[in-house]
Image (cartoon, rainbow, N blue to C red; front, side):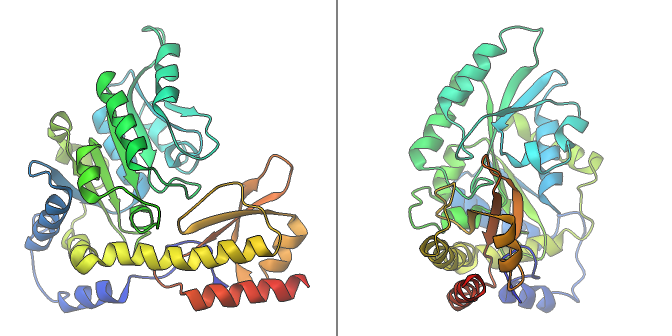
Length: 342
């Protein structure tokens, strides 16, 4: 059955797997201090044009988010996010378990604005509240939308004005960079964030994420936080090898572009069939509203998932493309859906 359930169902991109097998029998030092991790770090530093940046490799997204946030915040401090943010709705209270409150702000499109942040800061007016200290955004967002360069610049200016850290979760960064309307470059990511999480697991790697720290204050003792949180990967070179593969010859962006092209076929086909999308997503996640009966029929021929109910009670159904999905598969899926509903 055709699967559009998520972007991590399959293993790694063929080029990633080839490089893993080619280097499999080599012996290297552990914990990310090997030559492959160093080379991957160099690739990232060159792309974002931040010579002083420090990059570390962790196994997965939730682990990455809780490690970064717990490291950056004092016990009385909190992190601001959109109500749909991954740390607010998909991490089982992982951030709260480290002792930090997540301040989820209402957002119709999954994004934050400087006005929303200013309002949140005004509400938390004294020391009887937690102190907001970090702004967490994701690109793409949990609903598939992406930030523009102007939006990112505005957020960075707001954070600098209010002495806040800006942390971008890029678990699906390949699909943001590969979106047709994207105007954010790698250099912009280095210039307008304090910490950048470059996703691997959902972007063609077998597993692994890269955390790049740009803000000088956050670099100190980060390796201690990684180890204490259980994130220091003994066979770290396996993540380094994968990021070298992804970041060479624009493979990372190409994975995002190809997946997005397949997603656009799904989007247009579902719209033609009468389904309404609650979000304007230019990326690999496409959401549509349908009845439970319609979902049951469709899911019998194409794998997709329900992401909760919409305001009117209809199912909010998500179709996700990844490195393996092709435009031909997307077209075939639309035809199967058309047939099952006719």
